[in-house]
Length: 305
Image 1 (cartoon, one colour):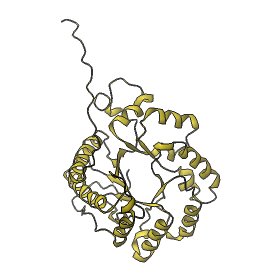
Image 2: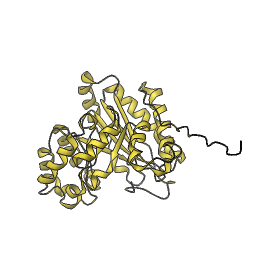
Image 3: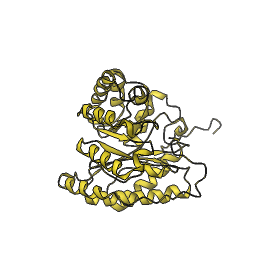
Image 4: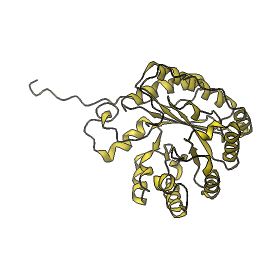
């Protein structure tokens, strides 16, 4: 995720903003139906990580087996491949066969809907996409719509119409990127209220260069966070601490599910960060999600022994 990435972190204030006042109300209303424990889903944007061969993947496995081993390390994935094509039925069956029943796919809506047609006259694509996502069954987490950076508040009526018509069977989170969505607090609050009324989750994006896309406003009892790290820089760990503390507070207030997706330029850093973050979450909430682990590799025999 290059959105909001900066080469120099010296002047970035990484402190999380305080909660939006409406977040407590949303969680209080959800507390009576909160599952025990709350769901904690952590993952990466892709599973074809060749850099994990010999560590988090067995050495020598082929790409068709990557998802199976990825699902042993993480319990969710931000499914970016669906941004470029709608999966066919055979592909979805293979994905489901490769993972366990508790694994969650969070597929991104195709760019043909979000970026090319910009939500306009996309009913045919939405129907095909929803059908594919629904076929994930119990493995479907929250799909998410990533709006392009140029899609601003002047298109709010189009966005509202799209969300009203979007199939209810597919849970949907929405990532806003244009800075004018957040510049006017009155407008932002109206948009958040719309998301809440339509049961759509606002994506919270933690990146260095755009601290405005971190409104800390929950519109459903689901926290959907996209985290952009910086190669295990000390600030990554400070931010992990802050997120664990905030999410623990939300769990105490009634949050139902947390999706936390880790973006690191070097994918070898993602499991290390995830382990640290999950340890913090376990200590603060008691929610135990197994961290990534290095797979023991077979030792080659000594030909001359």
